[in-house]
Length: 146
Image (spheres, rainbow, N blue to C red):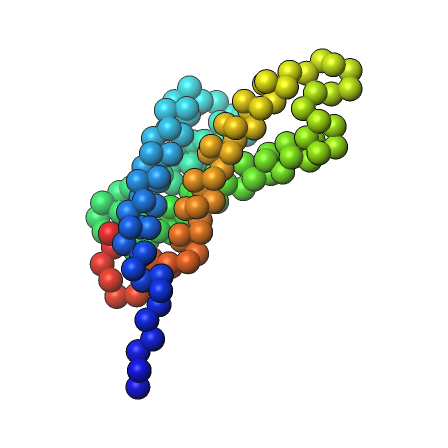
């Protein structure tokens, strides 16, 4: 019986280290942004507060080397990634159908580009984190948590 080698196994360690670095970096940024929203009940404020709670739970679980940390981290990625994906698709649709400036001339192409760049700067790392979770399934297997 021959054991097949998965070509992704050599990337598993570095990918998971980068996953947790991105998780802590983006989570810290979300926490700093949400500091102003604590106690408010707007949907975005509540989303940020829920993301902070998931981030805190995943951090504690990761520091205690629990495999449940990946479940909470994946929930955090989806909680932030899905609304952001919706906004990115909306902005792309607007850009394709109307352009960067509405027909009445009451828009700023520079503001449009800055918003677009900022959304993609948060959306791409979240997508890469989700890809790492799907490809490597770190909660399975007999290896210790990184």
